[in-house]
Amino acid sequence: MKILISNHSSIPLYEQIKNAMREAILSGDLKEDEKLPSIRAMAKELKVAILTVKKAYDALEAEGYLVSRQGLGSFVAPKNLELEREERQKELEAHLIKAVSIARQFDVSKTEMFELLDYIYESENNEQ
Amino acid sequence: MNNRIEIKKLTKHYETFFLDDVSFKVPKGYITGFIGPNGSGKTTTIKSILSLIHQYKGTILYNGQDICGENKSYVEDIGIVMDSTFLAKDWTIKNVERAMSVGYSNWDQHQFEDYLKVFEIDQTLKVKELSRGMNTKLMLAIAFSHQAKTLILDEPTSGLDPIIRDEFREILQAYVEDEEHTVLFSTHITQDLEAIADYIVFIQGGKIYFTGSVDDFLNRYVIVKAGLDEADTIEASAIIGSRQYHTRFEAMILREDLPKISDHWIVEKPTIDQIMVFHKRGNN
Image (tube, rainbow over the protein chains, first blue to last red):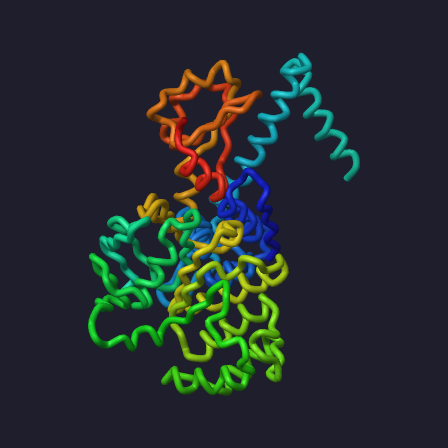
């Protein structure tokens, strides 16, 4: 699992940890049912406060990525395809929103955007 | 029992200084930072916890037990690291070892020797020949070798270089990893706390201003900045501390008071240092 956090980012530390772990789960780097490091071991590893890691784990559990088993620790939750799809869709939307805002900025019309999208799909098809 | 130490309404009057109704908790298994300007009462509070000061009003509980009784054996459960050593300067490390083995019923000689090796402390040296960093490590080695469940650190990292401080933070994180060991860490080097502390106790002028998680502490306040012409558009009662420069006005307010500020002011999350400075500065 790769976790890179920055003390100088405007994103809170716990959120950075949460995002990195979620990414590791979605990408399959962390496997279903895999045991995660304890909160305290992770805090020591990342050199952050215990409560910071706890907050990240709690958030991941609330969002359905982790399950904690009393006395055993935290594990990667069984794969939830719906959740994963939803997550990817959110990501896609964010990119599209950005694309649209750039389009507006430079007066690219909706029709032109659709044409562009068609073009991208077409050229990908041709390559395959 | 979730609190290692609990202080209730600790009050102590000196001629020039007093502790006023000081209450806070040190949760078991976590690192709690104890911050405040010089002379704000940190050391007096710590001395009270260690029964080095007896005459006070209020209650101090250690593992739920009132410490004011005759039995002071709880002190053996506490390791102490201070900015200057409490050991005689002319002692060799061997002398230190012998003195501690008499002083602590739980003393483990082998463990001590192991820590000396880990910390690379030369056993043939005298206490006065050790560098500051080595002295701090020696005090840690002593604390760990009498099975202390609690570490109380009074300005342990002042005067230490960044490399030793980093090592020191790692040692503390490893120490609390088992959920049992507990640290109360008084320091002016607040970057150390921003990195690893879970809870903060903020004392100023003998009064407690905040106790809670570091996150809550940092999120409680914001620093706002604007041109001098706009300085008086913010109501004075919302300002915790402020300062006027030739080019701008800066103030610290509670985050919940943000709606009282016009949109285009610059808003920043403060550091622990800034929170202390603005509190001290007040609103002039």
